Amino acid sequence: MIKFDYKDLLQFLSVKEIESYLPALQEAEKQLVNKTGPGSEFLGWMDLPVNYDREEFARMQICAERIGKQSEVLVVVGIGGSYLGAKAALDFLQDPLTQLKAAGEHKGPHVLFAGTQLSGRYLQSMLDFLQDRDFSINVISKSGTTTEPAIAFRFLRALMEKKYGKQEAAKRIYATTDKTKGALRSLADQEGYETFVVPDNVGGRFSVLTPVGLLPIAAAGYDVEAMLQGAAAMRERSSLPFGENPAQQYAAVRNALYNQNYLLELFVSYEQRLASIAEWWKQLYGESEGKGEQGLFPASVNFTADLHSLGQYIQDGKRHLFETVVQIETPDVDPIISADPQNLDGLNYLAGKGMDFVNKQACKGTIEAHLEGGVPNMQIQIDKANEYSLGELFYFFERACGLSAYVLGVNPFDQPGVEAYKKNMFRLLGKPA
Ligand code: PA5
Image 1 (tube, rainbow, N blue to C red):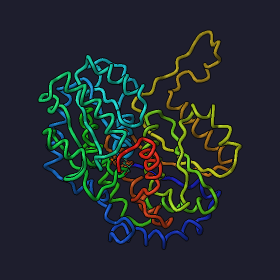
Image 2: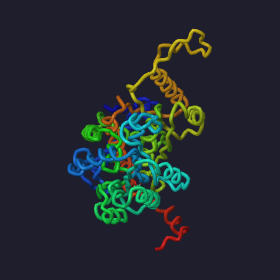
Image 3: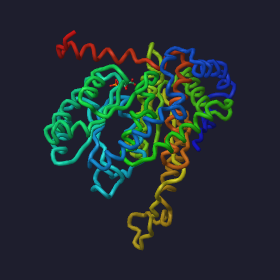
Image 4: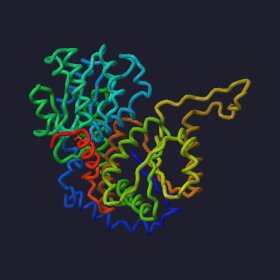
């Protein structure tokens, strides 16, 4: 079970101050549950762990298995909320060297991501790599019109049709998009691709528990039912009173810190496997709260690597940041440091100790140092890294985000600012009106 611990914040915030957010939180909770707040047409994610299309879920599992049999590589094409959840999940669950391992040495096909940016170099490298490999495509776009994935898909589809012929290619392309509208829906229907639906009432960054996230995760061989169970357990906890409700606590303290002029939240991890979860989290909070000249800036660091780069700033730079440390209690593996008769590296004092012990002491020591340096700190503990805890974590952050944004006074479910760059880009590209 995920635990949330904010006792170290009490050096920076009084209990009274935190509790002063309770009325606003209760109001935000009501707005979410009764669907009365801004953006209430996008609250479908709240019930996804228990309320989803079972027929589609079963079909998705069949397709996931077929992808695994059909292909050495699955290319997921999507951007923003249409890929960050799957990427976060896979980097959390997979062996860190999965991409270097041959088929049979790891679960499922290799999963690569395309359409996440506009680099021709990256795209060309992927096209060259796929020439001699069996691959499938899961193209994901809720609107069905986003430029980056649309361009990547055009290239990938052309390669696939050349390689397998149009008919066989159609059996290897899976489209996740709107039920009825958008260019991708029309193309998929015309070409006869297997399709999955992004529900109307679920926005991109809240869509990881729909086929947007679940199909690639299942295709890579992971248990998406366990993910939904973990999310369902967190959903239950999210209606408990404040003292037992981690989502409400997190929403309250980050608003309290923001109003004390701590303007930047650092997602801190001590395991590389959490780095892509931080990327997903940044989108979730950045796009949901950063509007109307308001909102915490969500950033991330991966320790201990970044202690040797950004550590100086965090310890000693401008005092406008706080840390949310995400930790894993029980490691999957724990290599033990051996004794060395010569001890030339001076490490024998650690002989017999596991890497997890060393990592945890680094974490404790860093938290102490940062607290002394004036950096407020709170912690999220994951008991074990598996599908269930991942489901808990995703739902925890989503629920807290909805609450936190309502307490802040913004609509968490729109993203008007994202249009500005598109408008200019389309003008410069000469896109017809
Ligand atoms: O959260 C969001 O809504 C966005 O980040 C979208 O997910 C992203 O822009 C991709 O949009 P689409 O799925 O329509 O291609």
